[in-house]
Image (tube, rainbow, N blue to C red; front, side, top):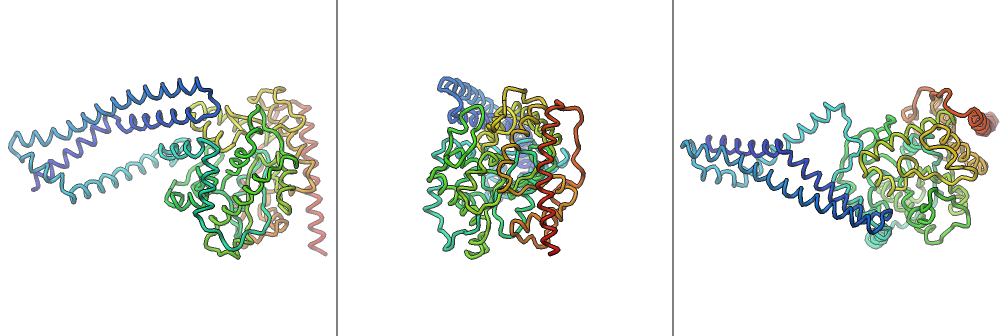
Length: 500
């Protein structure tokens, strides 16, 4: 019996080593990637019919070649596995029939399979540890990519998913009554850090990565797959030190704006929303969607607690919708982090260059960002059409482009200063506890014993030198001073009220 076990294990080891040596996993993964690329091309609204046909033909040819490559590698692995069995039979060590009978037993199959899985997991963790804990920039598996392409194949799919959820998932007896909270600013202003802090406050409900890709059906998707998935905590693609996992909050609400206002996204820049852009169906969908997010985030708090919970959105593009938000969601509060323009524009430029490189290396990064409506950076960059912004005046790979963009964006935001709550990023860095406590008071939130210093950089923002046109720098500095005065005025008023 011992010889049969030893020879069978040698055969299993030879089979595995042959698969590893011929790199069959890499070939199979490339075949699936090719399949996903073909499906993505078929469903990509940016491509015309001729381009789709060419892409699908290329994918088909690549799959035929990949199938042949997988076939001969598998045959080679079978031959490698058979070699020790046949050799042992020839020399009279053990009969091959006895080895095959052992290998076909259920207990043998189960034990060897479990051992192989454990060994592969140990090797995977060791390789991840050897790489410093950082994986590839894009952690989407082949299955994840498939479901992403399926979900975003057509606006009808996401709308249908929402309708199916409405029919299958029971509704609470009490609907949320608290107005939503919107965190918005240009990207790189500190909106994510602020969202992470607010996310931890009791009664706040936000989107998380677990809602991807069927964002419009968060409750249904959570029951089907969302709660079963696991991704190790890792640094996000921005490379800014912020770590995320599936339960980290993120901005996915933009998908809904794309669903109902596709015309806004069809030009080289994204148009602004005004009061007259209201659509009754979209308004109702948004409000119903906010209720869904609250239900899936706070399922154990009960209907009464959920009714007083607040939907919190972090969406950078909402800086283009402030009048619309005020009209559609009476009583809503809009929080706008403001970063010093020289630092902010430099950070915008770095991220644009970062995503240009990522999207050139992996086209799925481009597809992913386009589908979720993140047009801030890279090959798909579409600026918001702020009045006065001249997209062709500077090249997006130059610092002056982003400083010019900052000026026009915050001139637009300043128009609604009476309706927004401004927070300086410098204050969040220098005194996070006091700044966030003051913000929570204005938002009527109870943070409890939450330590806000954990969510923000503790070092001062680094100001770049000699990057920008002096005239632009002067204009941006004067505009930033106006925001400083607004914040300072509020702080003085709050101090007077406290002493009174």
